[in-house]
Amino acid sequence: MIRARQNWEESPYYNERLISLYTFLKRAAGPELGKQVYQEAVSQDIPFGEKHIANPRYTGRVLIYPISWLEKYFGQKYIKTERDLIYESREDDFDF
Image 1: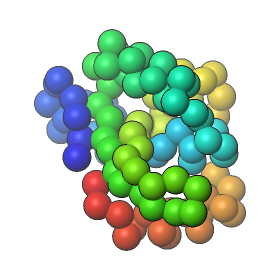
Image 2: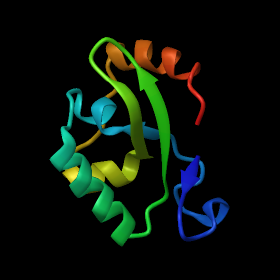
Image 3: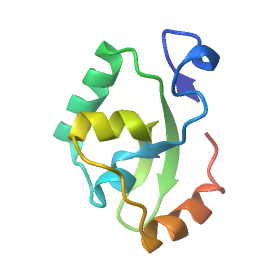
């Protein structure tokens, strides 16, 4: 599910992949940072999605954001690693 006040198809992020903070940061973000990122995305009207994950460390809902927006927010480039490629193949099993 994609959430945005603006029309998602007209967003500059429409063709962009959405990823979780965990995937972007290569570590768990934690609830406080997650809340800060969410609030900033809402204040900037950045479209974001959500998905449900289940693994040994966490089961529940995670929010996903456009990669380029996360790069701007954190001031760093997203570097895809071999672990990300494995994770992406598993993401295909999730409903968005």
